[in-house]
Image 1 (cartoon, rainbow, N blue to C red):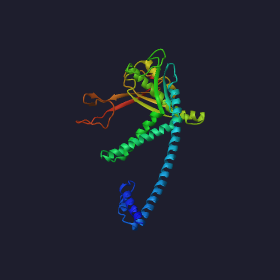
Image 2 (image 1 turned 30 degrees about the horizontal axis):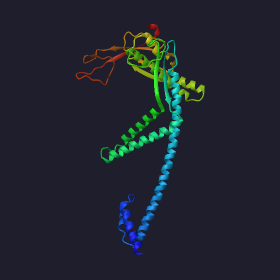
Image 3 (image 1 turned 60 degrees about the vertical axis):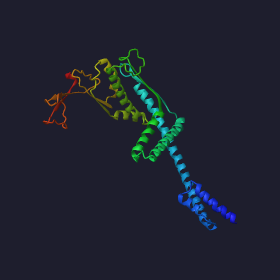
Image 4 (image 1 turned 60 degrees about the horizontal axis):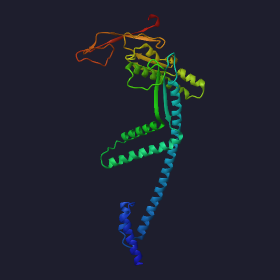
Length: 334
């Protein structure tokens, strides 16, 4: 009996000294065992630890179940997102790749879209990235080299996840252009440094107009019937304001090619161009409304003339008031 008690005491002290899963108070209770009279205390400690273990096990199972449900939900949403991405890419390719008007000018857009079989791989990659970020954060906090700005951390984490998703959903993207006013022959060409400023401006304007069309068409395609789609196109309103339009673009053929097809967007897309070229000749087929602003007053700011009203601006010596006279010029007066 004495040997059993001695073994009990030695084993209790040993476990209390080496077991890392015990709380300090539990380890200390085992180290203080003196004899058989402490058996009830150890039994109570054992039953308490066992009860905590069962509760932790139940909690872990709930967490694992919650994680599975969350993964299923995110996977389902990603599947829909990928379906939308593939559909939208098809709409974009159709809109920007269509020849408009009398000019041969359009874009060819291509990209690989992640299929549903790659969703699990994508999810695993996102989870792995989050785990790495969390581990690095804990290490920085342990060294005292990282603050407790949780909002900034989570904003950064969300941005990383978004970037990971976009890069995974679309891969190998390419955009080429066809514009016989820039490169004759009708072949596809890539954007490069050999393009002049005017050619770059023409392609930028051409791309902006096609993106406006894409925005209208994408929203219309969300609807189920052709009638509702057509109604959505007719009711859609998009406005784009470009300051300094045609500042680097004066070639009439290049302008026409870049704006080819804008007539078809009339009523649903409004392009407002602020043109500072005094020798600009308006094409009423593309811009049916021409409004001319006339500077008045001799307000100066240093060595620069300013013609538009800016009530928030003040001169050190005196207040400056400038006015602009705007009048609509009908096509018949040109």
